[in-house]
Length: 284
Ligand SMILES: NC(=O)c1ccc[n+]([C@@H]2O[C@H](COP(=O)([O-])OP(=O)(O)OC[C@H]3O[C@@H](n4cnc5c(N)ncnc54)[C@H](OP(=O)(O)O)[C@@H]3O)[C@@H](O)[C@H]2O)c1
Image (tube, rainbow, N blue to C red; front, side, top):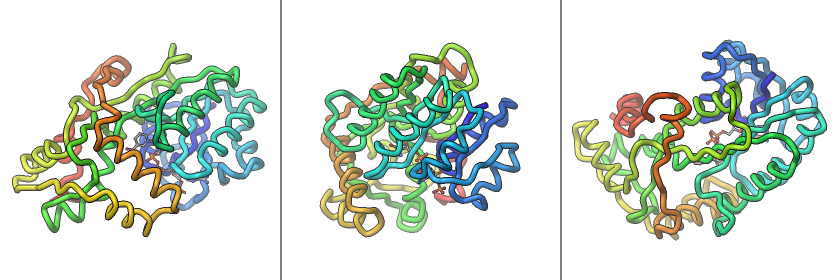
């Protein structure tokens, strides 16, 4: 039996869908049962709890042999991931599939990739089998700019001339499901990207072509963007996102293309054009 964390979120939700489509039995630890109604309808067993609450995590881990560990970014993420790993080992889990990121490296300087790297090392040292999923920037992040794209024909991010090899969370979820339910993924570290490396100016060109109207990318001033982030996120999280975006803008985390989707799923990764077409009502 597989346990999923983060299953009501973007990537965890796609992972749950992909497992259900494969007919694989899974359980999800969720903190809001109402929000998880679609998971239940898809046949996913639900356990109510919180990753910071050891008792609820242990309850969810009963009878589990494979764990999908996805936690949202925050000051407590590393502490929570380590606690879940310890509880998983005690519960007899034999394989952890961890949601990391492509920027996670030994010499990472921004807090989010540093945290992912530390968590990856903790899992590697745990004695359990592991698979690391290391996606690049999510295409779904643009849904946060949908209102601006629709109403103002612009989107603004502090990415300067930075480039990413953005990936669709549907591909990431499908890769996660294969890592959990397929064979031979233990001890593997999978970078996950879309089919292209793009600047944000090129992203605007893709939006313009698909929507049939000129969409512009307006590079945001990093300090002004951080002030906006601080209005909606806790201080640590706002600073951490700002630091990561700053590294992308500065070209310090140069993306490369990976063939993980092609190799594991036997098909091409979703393109940005396809992502836009699939969410056209949000953008037009
Ligand atoms: N965004 C990117 O471009 C990108 C790229 C590479 C890697 N990543 C990594 O991806 C991860 C985030 O994935 P995502 O964007 O798919 O997540 P997401 O959509 O933000 O969803 C987060 C999930 O975690 C759950 N959750 C939050 N706090 C919890 C708690 N205390 N106990 C139990 N569950 C809790 C949420 O539940 P609720 O529904 O109840 O809130 C939700 O299901 C991060 O680790 C990030 O570093 C992101």
